[in-house]
Image 1 (spheres, one colour):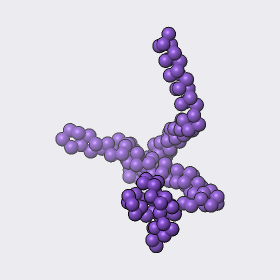
Image 2 (cartoon, one colour):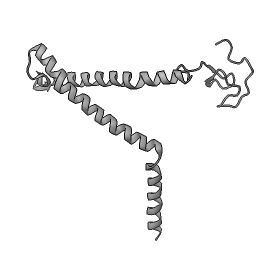
Image 3 (tube, one colour):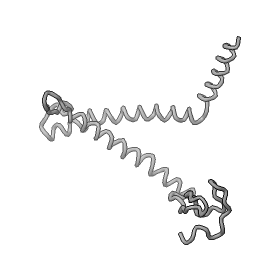
Image 4 (cartoon, one colour):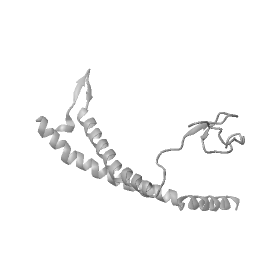
Length: 148
């Protein structure tokens, strides 16, 4: 009977964890990221790779390799992966980061962090606007941070 209660309790705890908003958001983000990566990988292998292969005069670009002491190094696949990475990074920057920064600026959120200074009592790095240290609870004078 006790084992049944433990299983039911564990199941309830697991269900609560899975249904949290951040866990669901993370799952959606991972699924979208995997789909986006598949699209980018297809663009690289079906468009950019043949284009680069045509420029270099090699029909099978991903098979480019060299051998040292019987070990084969497939540098064509490495170049494909680098191209994929660069395209994903550019897309994420221009489609996610830049628009989010613009929205944050419009809403008045500071994109730059506030200056920090060391607490005179415990030397913890804290926001210069603080009036009490969060680490040691030292009460700080009005001009404790000096001229930042």
